Image 1 (cartoon, helix red, strand yellow):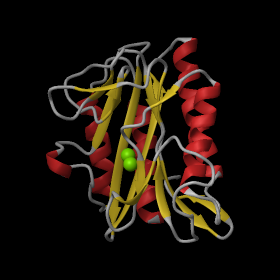
Image 2 (image 1 turned 60 degrees about the vertical axis):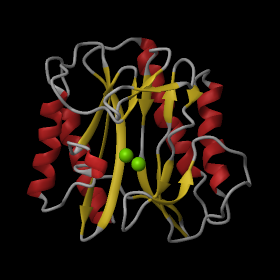
Image 3 (image 1 turned 120 degrees about the vertical axis):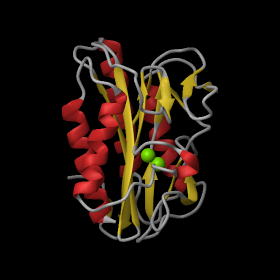
Image 4 (image 1 turned 45 degrees about the vertical axis):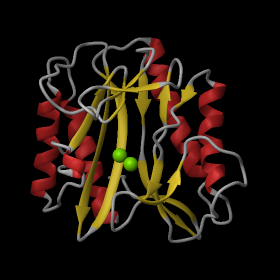
Length: 236
Ligand code: MG
Ligand code: MG
């Protein structure tokens, strides 16, 4: 899973470097595809329930699952990229949000708070804690900032498949839910809206947007719980 995680991290690095005004989300998908092929990995996104690309590209009010295509990114947009890779049957899955050129202070704060909420969730991934401690930590950071946590889409166990049990909600109560054990591998992925938490699935059957059309951000890592604390697997 570390090997798969490193491929995902390289996809992130290359895609980050390619994001600029004028680039299309299809071009960003091609960057991700190149990394997967060069590293001899396979994509767990391509063909997933028919998904046509190796990344999800979700600009501005798109929360998750945006399909790459002819959409051209413009100065001031924000873009969430979610992607994964499989090496020797083991899966990695991670996401980030970044600005395109100069972005508003509000957009920058949303991105910072969402990333901070992921790291608060990761810090709660210690042996003896519960699934609810992760969600409570994420939710605490998000709501303290005045933003809302998307509840319909959640993190998940990951290993031989991209999505395994348990579900890892981005909200919860400390001490509730299943216990965390050493050797568990989870994908934690807060989706955070500036406005209301309400979501809307568009007619392509994939793209999930905010119902109020306000901005949304998404960060995710694949993490192993060890006796020495959480280990992020989707880092370079
Ligand atoms: Mg993901
Ligand atoms: Mg995931």
